[in-house]
Image 1: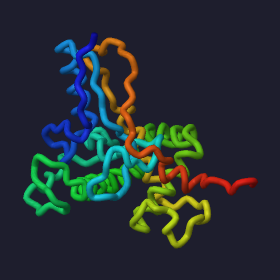
Image 2: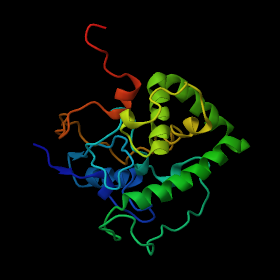
Image 3: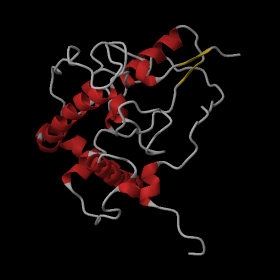
Amino acid sequence: RFTGVLMPLFSLRREKDGGIGDLTALEQWIDWAADHGVGFLQLLPVNALGEDDAPSPYSAISSVALEPLYLSLERVPGMSFPLPPYPEEMPPLQLPGGPHLVDYARVRAYKRHLLDKAWVVFQNDSSLSHERVEFEDWVQKEGQWLEDYAAFRVLSIAYGTTAWWRWPVLRPPREHPAKWRFSPFFYPCAPSRRRRAKSPLPPVPRLRTPCCHPRPAPSHGWAAPPQEAGS
């Protein structure tokens, strides 16, 4: 028998987390679990979410990409320190708001602003040349899914919806605007800065969280729409 804990990643709060639970907080919980004989930690899905003010973990826009809001900002190459304080005194951008709830709209604006600034530093800082080579190698290794996802992410922000069938242009030319390179920037950040937990959890059977909305992720449908019958 195993004792385990089910926890949404967004609820694992810590000091200076930018308004939402993140991967550093998850590491701290892994250490806690190892110290207290807890056999497993089960999370809700952590895949990339759309631009909704209160997105469900089950409404992912990709079955491959992870949600960058969970990234620990202090681990991002090019991030400037100290981080500006999270604007707790700012009126909530969605209701309900407050220090004990995740205001996705405000968290997204805060973290995206800092990631934009880190991306500029990452591209130009000579001390990060090795990390840039690793990033480009990673982009090439991941291949077509990453290019499709980056394009989908940028266009969905530009058009204000992940419903690609409502976009005015469904098949833009496959060019490489600068923003398309920024979109996957944060995904290799967490693995490259990850430390090993104090002690590993014992092996347990893999658990599957039931999905309430069994449908293809929007970015995959846009990149490879279903073909007509007989085609």
